[in-house]
Amino acid sequence: MTDASLAPGYRMLLEPPTVDEYRRLRAVSGLSPKSEGQAEGAIAGTWTWRTIRLDADADGGAGEAVAMGRVIGDGGWYFLVADMATLPEHQGRGIGKAVLRSLLAEIRERAEPGAYVTLTADPPGRRLYEAHGFEDVAPARTGMSLLT
Image (cartoon, rainbow, N blue to C red; front, side):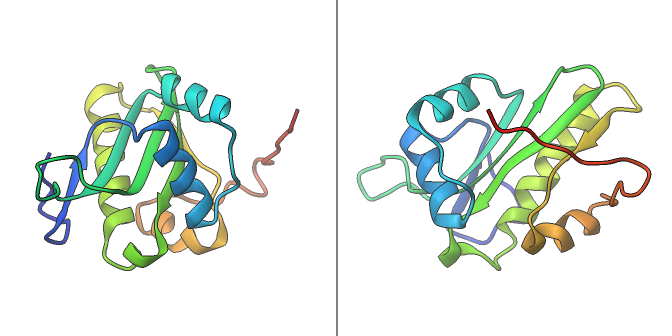
């Protein structure tokens, strides 16, 4: 898939990264590391994916995965944007913005009006999400988590 908003040399795919790429993208971009089993479950249980790769290498093989984002959801009304990650050396080039726009466009295309889209943002990502219409839910709602 080509995306006019991507800088030359990058291409967006509607598929997940490999397990190893997923784990590397999370760890190197500053997200918490995940085990192989967690990565496999994340890949299998995702509603839609975007992976940004460098253009194919000289041998025609897949280029390196440099960014990703995914949506977890029920396909009806509830969607969670997750695993937005870009390798540090590729940040600041609009890659995260392109991934988020593409994910949100798919939700708008496939879900009925009134879909609820949520996410948990790390401070560096806050500007990106606010620029795309996300609003802080506090104090109307309380964000909570549970690690098992």
